[in-house]
Length: 359
Image 1 (cartoon, rainbow, N blue to C red):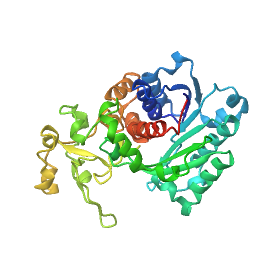
Image 2: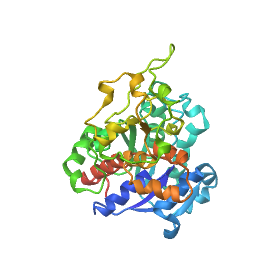
Image 3: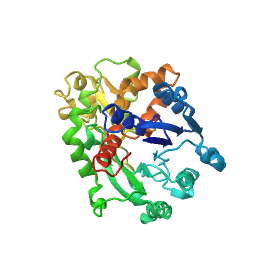
Image 4: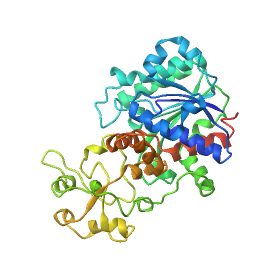
């Protein structure tokens, strides 16, 4: 199946399809990709080498779709994927939605769909999109797709249900021009997809971690450890105007964010004490120590490699990006913006094995 990856980032959709091809579930071939961030493109190219296969590097989707001939001249494709920009819909952002330029990116997907009408579409965004503007934003998206002849289905998918230890709730939207069973709206749920994946995941090529202890490295560079000065701030439970529970050593990680390199409090990001890491979780000082005592321990943040692994990528993907000249701050951003590979794999596996997607 020929695939066009929009808002590609570091290629989470593509990675899932590469693994499905490797597992002989279905053969996928990427014909082109769009990505505006040059650092993300570096990581993408360092891992997939798209130029060697003659794939179309679309670049900025706004500029690309400005000329309809660019869309017409794309190679044939059956499936479009994209994690279109979500900051305008996120609870962490201003929730400006379609009123901000980044919120308009969805309509450039529509430009491509209107002209080429591929059979399948799979999109990802933040959980809050479903309820943004009292549900009107999602209904606009659904109506735009339906106006092009697509049947549209969606649900909230939690990464933690797909053998990646990260609580990450994301909206997946699947649309197709092909006929589906009458009860497909009830079929297409996170729980059904997760149950199908659970039955077979041990035999598949996807990552498989029960907790973060399965992927935390015991020895890392000193730069990843928190300084004595910053530890009290990271561990603080907030201020008079903002209270939070800033725990460390979470065995199921908090959602990775694109801004994790900025070092938020431990209520937003993920930090681990060295004794917890070395004991693979059997020693957890959080249970016995005060915040002041914890601040005296060696505590570190995730490495970029670990962040990539929490999203279902091999650690080598981060290393390849670094070797291509991408700095840690950008690698963290890329991991935080990525789709979770296992979630996409499981969703496509479910759609394929239920004969919803077929070649």
